[in-house]
Amino acid sequence: MLSKSTKIILNYIFGIGLFVWLSYSMYHQLRYKDNLHISAEKLRQSVGAHQVAIIIVFMMMILNWGIEAWKWKVLINPLEKISFRRSFYAILSGVSFSVNTPNHIGEYGGRILYLRGENRLQAISATFVGSISQFITTLLFGCLGLIFFATYFGADIHFLFLPVFFWKLFVLFCLLMVATLAIFLYFRLTLIVRLFGRVKWLRRFQKYVVVMAEFPPSMLLKVMLLSMLRYLIFSAQYLILLEIMGVEMLWWQGWTMIFLIYLVMAMIPSVTIAELGIRGEVGLYFLGLLSANKIGIIAGTLGIWLINLVIPAIFGSLLLLGIKVLNEGKMAVILKKQHV
Image 1: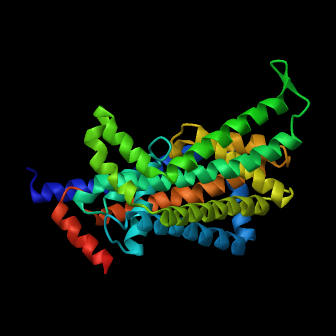
Image 2 (image 1 turned 120 degrees about the horizontal axis):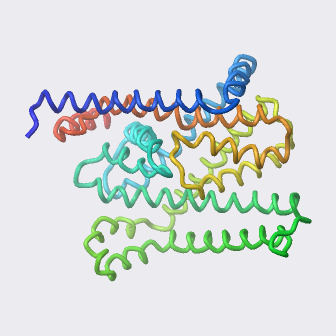
Image 3 (image 1 turned 45 degrees about the vertical axis):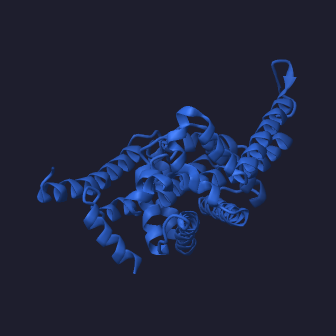
């Protein structure tokens, strides 16, 4: 057994250590990327020249994660009643965990710290339902982006004796099939619960996913609509930042291209804190078809990465200082105070 003083030390080391690591990782990403200092300077200048627009983008960030907190609160409700503030804290803490794990998988661990111990494993499956709704949203809007891309770019180029346009349509067809299957399973979660009951090696985990069978279609539709609203908000943030950085293009073309960028990013396994280079390359490829302002595109990509992911992650790591991860009794008292 650990002594009380040892637990306190370990708890604070955990929170402070995560904060320091996130800060160092952000510095490393900004310091060692080719030509990124030019885009960072462009971002700094634009912040000074467009303060109102930047404030709007920050407010949209709060709204973005606020909607995610509302969505998670709805999903967790069958397990445990939590306040919106507690849900919002959990979301930010989840972001701080997720930035160091592939494809945001660490967010599950950060969020469940705010729940009672007996509910945490079931909460993972409830959180997974929210991730499915966000993934479906990314697929559907990404298909719109792919339709635009297939229509306007590369129609006359050939690959393996077939027009690239054909391959784009093939990819679009596959994505639509995946989206259709995902939507079907999303509104038939009882099928997944039954699968856990029928497969021998999954049977012991069924008690942790049974909560998914308690979600009525009306609630799942609400969660899906919240996911779509959130998606439109952070897509609009990206578009506003590109406008601030002087990237000139038709707004609807930029928006559809952003849909395609998010689709590609969702398909590429990556760690958030280290994905700035990937985001920059993907953004340059697709948005570069609409504008020659490469510095502005990279600056906008840098801005959305900092505002929507890095800054919330740093705040989330600081919130972890208020949670006694290794002391269940203390944690329950803190959560009870947050619930008031």
